[in-house]
Length: 282
Picture (tube, rainbow, N blue to C red):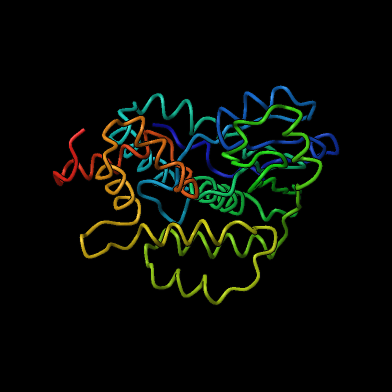
């Protein structure tokens, strides 16, 4: 695999006025990207296709070692190929080395998106001091008129423009400092230190939905008397209630576990773990 293009190029670029007006939208997935095409918003698009809420992570997200490890894990967890991962994930990251004047981050409230958001911000911090691009966050936890909001992928182009016009906030140095500290604690795997930081920190700046997502992460890092984390126990309870069909299990989990933001392939990771312990039989 080739990761050399991830080396920062800001130090090698001579920025001009035209470059500083170029906009990049980093979208949280292909579903949002399809709806985004219906908007009238200008700018290039980068679809973030990683799931940093699952699998191994390292602090230096800009390193080749980070992405090599991610590629190996994704390949095993989802039966993906290194070539496909390179094309769909790593190659897209080349846009982060371009001299954009404005970057818009479109991520949601759940752990899946918040972990990815932390990764994106920390990757930007590795590539530039952020003195040039203005970085904005569009992060909805709800949407007017939708009693059960599941994410931006269910919105149309006009609704995405509504979010852009009404909830977009510019991130600054305090937000980047929070994201940097949160990422370090997240990748460290030290639950007690993360919990202490979450309890003591009272300022969240523009990252208003980060704390509940990281609290959900804490729940899955610890196990109960049965040796199960919060996600595994929730899935086992669903199974023991009489729901034995995978699709029905997904639906039941999403009703109360949307804070995790997991798709069916991610839920399967935990179902396989339960099956390996012979606690379920699907």
